Image (cartoon, rainbow, N blue to C red; front, side, top):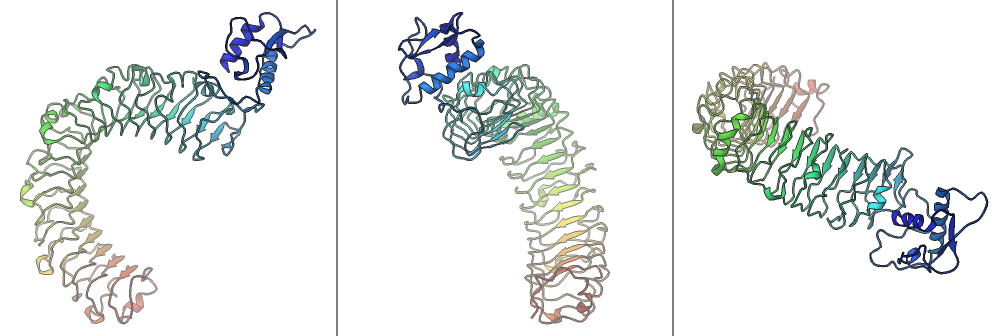
Length: 553
């Protein structure tokens, strides 16, 4: 369209022009066939008084040209763009949804090509989940008000995305190009961008102005590409100092990218083989996962500089121990899915702000955890130790722990003082261990006055143990070998709301007679092999809200 207008202006000179029925070119020296396939139209002066102004002439000429070209089927090689349907004015494309506010939704309608003649007032354009392979710059250039462009999950290649594609989008804020087939990033993106998503492509190269010189840019998503260190410019974020989120997981980086923005607080580098020392003192949240034991020195050298780091993820590596010198201000520490066998005396004690410690799916045994490993961690309230090799309760548990998950281990006994110092414990999960009723000391839970939920499911219990905390609200004993509920085991548990006893060996005479009367707050009962409603239980039926899993016979 721009080419047509330029040549029209060259042809008309100072007079008014209209197409002539005779053949010929629009202007001397212009050898391209007029109308791209129609007979050449000669533009002759129009000597009519009160001729229309230049803008109107241009529209009239374009309209006549379009009508004259209606029969054209072929386009000469090298012509930029595509032929629009003759006489069709801009409007809502077929099968798309459009609003008066400028929102055009063409997502998931099996488009093979970028739609023509979109409304020029479009400000939000959704083209995701189609099969578009190519973008035509002149079509995008018309959308001067466009703020959001969603092209994710198409078939766009770098060849089909010309360098000048986004040149005229001076209001573009959000660009989504994830899940395409791009191999190199665009050399230029508008400096108005706030967020750019290029995840799940085949990118190998980023240019200096792809993300540089964009003061409003806040988030960049580049994960699941093929980026290497050589494909990143040193000045990748030059002039983009306000970037806060950078996601670059699952690439081929060996070093932390250079000259990162000072405002950055979340950096994801999962599954990258990083070897450089950390010099990211300003980062607040870091996913740094592919840090294998051979690179432990890199952690020790630079990690302590990360004074503002609060979130550190070292999961899914091959760590056999926790690295020394972790940042002191970490709040959440992911260490799951490693091969950790020991926790040393001083490796965690300097992290005074630690609140969440995730150590599940490792190879920890109780003797591998130093009794002072958690000493001084007054803010640590959640500890996950499930799926390890613990044969007993570790010594020196955090004093202020509220949630302790030690299910799926090999614990066979609970001694009198195993929980003697965990006064604040509210949730304790000991399910799927090797516990037997005689090996649970009847005073093991005496200090747990704030305990609300206790799970002993999936063990080898044959009777309900004594000594449960009186403030329990949820007690899970399912999938054991329980055949007896001895007298007094449920006494005083007036706050118990839920009791799980399914998949055991209980019969009606297995439960002492006053058991249900003592559970005045009970709202849900799950049991099995009950042949009749026992005395006392019937009196509670107006309180019970869940008897669906209670197979009366």
